[in-house]
Length: 210
Ligand code: SF4
Ligand code: SF4
Ligand code: SF4
Image (cartoon, helix red, strand yellow):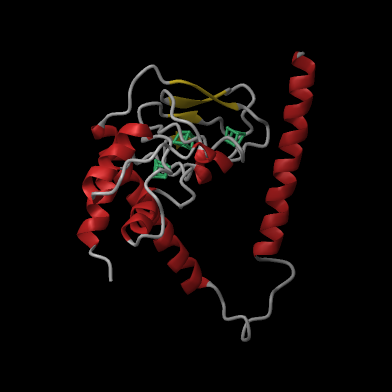
């Protein structure tokens, strides 16, 4: 059994961008893997050489070069949404690990630059490629890391609670046959159609703008 205070002390040295570049679902799972001896200390590009040195000192292990197969260390970036092309699909909101994007279904979305960790996890899901990463023109501070950890934890707690609610509300599969006129599959299809038509509009708008 790993001492949870060791996980805490390792986690305290990680940048908390929650970018997953280390190969774990966020900074805390990586901290746990290091504490368990399951991961090396060289997998965090945002932390860079400084972060590796701090981990090496804490754990009394040799300093390693950053494993650049995980990514490279560089200046802080921030996401920017081209609001003229946003179709309001909310996929970026769902991807953001620290709730740094605001917007509503079918409304344009905006990144709260002060909260953005530069993780770029919102970019791949955007169906119209209207998110780009731009220089943040500032450095990532320990206060940013603290706030990002809190926001990530709050988001995880919210998602866990909503999953529990969904499970509690779901009818038991063997006692409640699916009503073909209602329910999740239909909702999913409607959403897919809505995104498809929004995409078609976005493509037409872009083509017209060229
Ligand atoms: S900042 Fe990214 S790479 Fe570093 S520990 Fe956190 S999730 Fe992993
Ligand atoms: S807005 Fe995008 S880049 Fe910024 S924290 Fe959220 S997912 Fe990461
Ligand atoms: S994923 Fe792209 S299109 Fe969808 S809401 Fe976010 S920025 Fe807008």
